[in-house]
Image 1 (cartoon, rainbow, N blue to C red):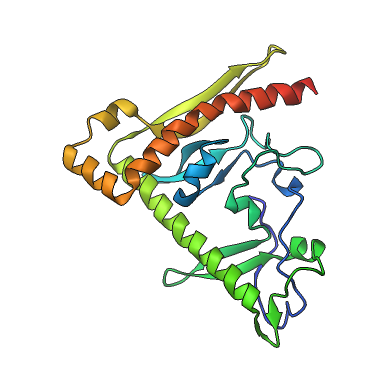
Image 2: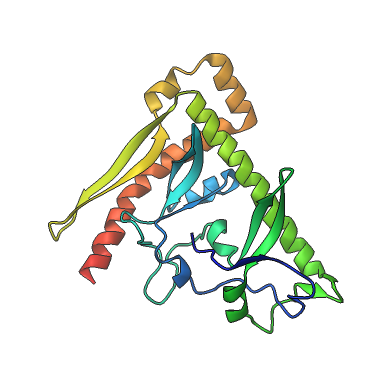
Length: 237
């Protein structure tokens, strides 16, 4: 996606590095969708369309649509400003990222070129005296919690797929200019099939929170119309 020069954090190599997160989002201006986690759904549904992307054989990842054209993010303007109240954590954490390693573990890494470019003196250091600073420990906990949330969210999407509840849809629109656009590859919950879910499974999902995630996803789909509005406004400008 927008991670290119990724290296593990190292106390010697990054002794002067600070926990500076990007405040200009031009790096995400050509990303039309990003993965999200279940803990974000209740906030995301107010502004974004939450769908599922097929990420493998019968594997589905919760995702928010940021545009209706490949390599176009309608939430970021030419100056790199993000136009929404909430910014998905996948975007906000940049240039930090967790990378999977052996034994189902992960290491905290950084997009080094970007990290050096956005350093701010007022931000806390990553390392102090060769050890992770207290601020870094807190941030690392947040990063690994997000990684665990992402794994659970993929399991959630995959369970929906195995239950046969997902159907593939396209988003299409006719712009004022006469241009027709269409975005494929989105999967959504089939409401008719959801209504036929066995009572025992429905009760299980109600208790473990899956049902609330499903309805947050369904309620969010009305925001697909907002993407058309954003695209029309961009074209008009």
